[in-house]
Amino acid sequence: MASHNAPSRPLFGISFRVAAMVNFAMMAALVKAGAAAGVPLIELVFFRNLFGMLPILVWMYFQGGPRLLATRNPRAHLLRGAIGLVSMAFNFLAVVSLPLNEATAIGFSMPLFSTILSAMLLSEHVGRHRWAAVAAGFVGILILVRPDPAQFVGWGAIYALLGALGTAGVTVAIRQITATENPIAITFYFSLIASLASGLILPFVWEPVSLVTLAGMIAMGVVGGIAQAFMTSSLRYAPVSLVVPFDYTQILWIGIIAWLFFGEVPHVATLIGGPVVICSGLYILWRETVRHGASRLAAAPTQSA
Image 1 (cartoon, helix red, strand yellow):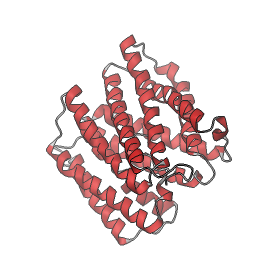
Image 2: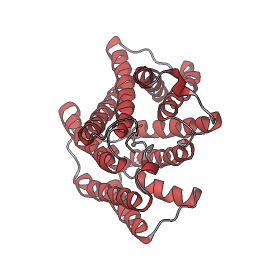
Image 3: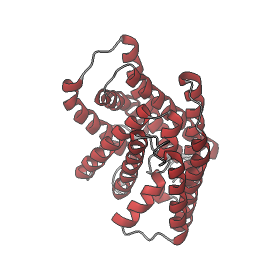
């Protein structure tokens, strides 16, 4: 929902959202480049969250300062942090294991899992229209993962699906705490918890890296934090129903980056299954907006958060 404290400026909201997707695409590319340079998964996760806090702290300063970090529900932050950390790990594994285009397209199955989890865990009513969209979306997923043993894309697809499921779990968790918790606090505490948790494991898996790779990992964290700040800032100027569809521009930016820097060309299955998954997600968004209003979707993260 657009903030009551900010005027409605749809172009501002859309611009922030698109900028967030560009940054998420750059983050994914830096994750893939870091893994190619031999950086372990935990090390990537640690740098992503530690340096991701820097833009969040700057964002907090301009939005009202440390008072925004006040919390009434620390246990909920711990739960959100645990689910989010596992989800991020699987999303990173998918990016490392699959071409960027395929990992991103499968990741957009998140709204399908979010719908299922909302029905199971929150006892939300899901009508036949949204169930039909979920079914259509899973047809798209089958096209993407190519279950034929001769073409199956392997563990990478499983990682991407588990990452999407985890991100859906984060969405459900966030829905439970947005009534009392500031979005900046939710974002900050996740990065803090994920940094501490991955930092505890880091000494056991640490691999020395070159200065160039180190700079890339720091940049990965910073652009990830910028993306989160831009994503939430978009909601100050425009309603969720307007800005969230622009999340799907991420697949365009990923396609450009994957082609320019990794020489990846989308598989025909991605070109067919990806639009099916995206259209089903957009339809679910539209039905939820019509049925419940935009406010309940305001804290929903993208797959890369």
